[in-house]
Amino acid sequence: MVRDQLTPKPDPWCGSLRSSICRGPVIELSVLGLDPAPQGSKRHVGGGRLIESSKRVKPWRAAVAREARLAGEQVAGPCAVELDFRFTRPRSHYKASGELRASAPRFCVVKRNDLDKCCRSTLDGLVDGGLLVDDCLVVELAAWKGYCAAGERPGALIRIRPIAE
Image (cartoon, rainbow, N blue to C red):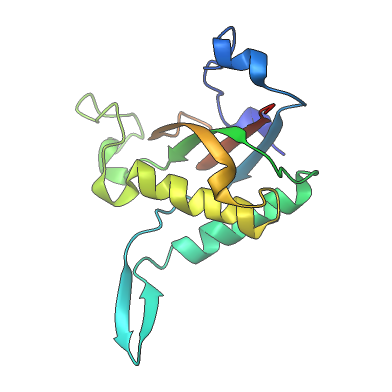
């Protein structure tokens, strides 16, 4: 895990009522080196076969599953999940000198990186990697998306907290 590559957000559960029902250690993992991919719609290709519309989903889910396998113990009960997605800025956001343009957007509001669809593909990758028994166990979800800061690599920081029943 390369935690210093992504700047962590403040802990939304810290000091909240929910933090009193969390049990066990927080499981943290980083998936770095490629932009998160949204799990979008399926396309019908004939003969009753459906394929994923986006070619980026398969490598993203595989990368998440690989990190999930290395994360340790499987979560088999209710849990809270925090996802922090970072995307590479387009070249058009930079001047020829490499400096960020004043007109570059602050927030990542690109339609192709829809936040809820990125959550879907990431949670499915956690299940594929065996870290979560099923994504229906996620009872609380916090997610952010943004552009990489200088020196950051694209990817996601994932935190999972088991919840006592």
